[in-house]
Image (cartoon, rainbow, N blue to C red; front, top):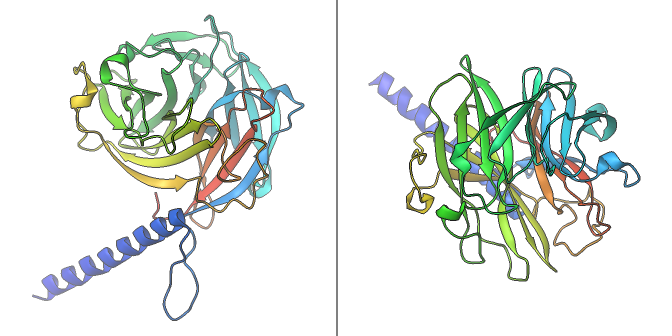
Length: 358
């Protein structure tokens, strides 16, 4: 009886703590304050901007950045350009108050046209999506040479300029996995996103050690507003483990600006749709909102040059999982692709995620 009482009490205490974390996360995304009781102090936000840095427009390395990868050993951030055949090094300032542009790494990858959309690190090599319309990933050494190519047949039937958009790598339990995702539905998987419904894309977990692959269906949000040239798709991902990952959804509506949300996605129990010709018949994986840039406090960001609902918003195409701070918060990095247009911003955003929110 005593064991049962202690177990029940611990279970209730765990439930209360989980509910409190969930409440804080919801409040941070809604902008609501959370009452901590008699102290009158608000709980810390589930997500907070550490730095919002607009990269120098006069430097060619600032532009067209579409994918990110964090190197924990070197304490460096790497970004790939979708227009120039290079990877740009970004060196963090103390406290991640900003970044300085470092040397670029020229990529010796034989593909034409060039469209570098995603980047990941696998030990001493870079993994690169060099053209989103080609269902393949390239591996190069840290100097950008020695390219090898492997095919990803799970992404046959990609729509033009809406293909491979996100890439990630994780080592877990002695195994190595590559993650990849397309931006909008394959031609056989249904329509693109609309104001009424999201689009179904495929998340691939590919074993680099010869194990079986997992392909899971992911349903994006509908487009946040009506308007011309409106869309919403997946623009990058960042693995937390072999079973969980962060997914960045990025939307655009002409005249209204962008939306950008980061979701925590759980692959445990996911239906493997590798053999399905139509992903609309599958059950999508579970996703949980972590960050919504339309509601997070935006005082650290400058005013964007084009219409946006918030200072934070722009065309975010790159996502990377960063280090854990001494206070237990985990950093994530987002980079916007400005397409070398004066109406867009080449921006690097550093966000701290509270313990328990991931």
